[in-house]
Amino acid sequence: MLDQSKPRKNPRSILIITMAGTPNTTAELTDEGLIANDRVVLDFSSANEEVEEEDEAEEGGERPAKRQRQEKDTTKAVEVPLKATFDRVDKINNTIMRVTGNDDSGFCMFNTSSSYPMMMVYKKEIAASRKLLKAKKPQDAFCIAMAAYLSMQDYDVWYHDTEDPRTVELLFTAYYKLWNDIFKSDDTTLGLKGREALIHELSKFGNGAKDDLEYNFPWFSKA
Image (cartoon, rainbow, N blue to C red; front, side):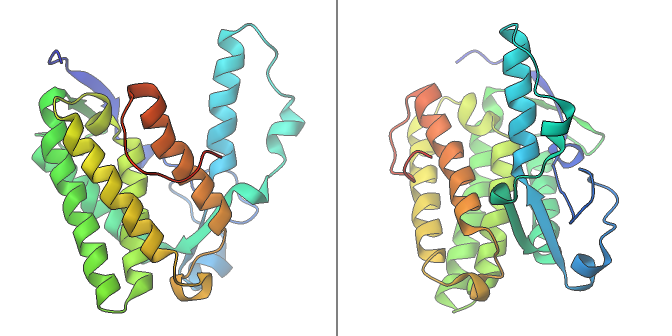
């Protein structure tokens, strides 16, 4: 592939986090009950609506009514441990910045050569999560896997612009196997609420890569 630089916003600034009854925000965690219990709710429905509205605008269709946009779809909400997950997100993203020669200024420049070092970062996260599973610490393993997902789907250049598609496929395969083993534990053990919503998002993530770029790896059934 051609080596093209791609300016990109730091995903940390656009990650959608919705606390109970609170508008989308990345800065103000105002729900005292969730925070006190070290919990956070990820609202994937809002992200999906933004994509749908952009598609409809491009096609000349009408956008959904504001009332409809404001209705929360709780079937697309995922509740996870706050500190363990997002401390790890920060660690992963800081490492991504370092290995790709970026800083945390708010904008990032990636090119084809960024893909391999990024994949090595994610490979290490998968291995770290796997190690915790073997140590019978499923919630810790879950939080790392969740943090990796939040980074992997935001910094998607690692599989969109690469000269090493085979390593992409191997990474997705290892990640899929990791999730299957994590999901052998029940939700209470994992500290998870919204398993079906999470599997739905994971399905879209991997199958989107397969459909768009013709990768071949095992993944969750299409949602």
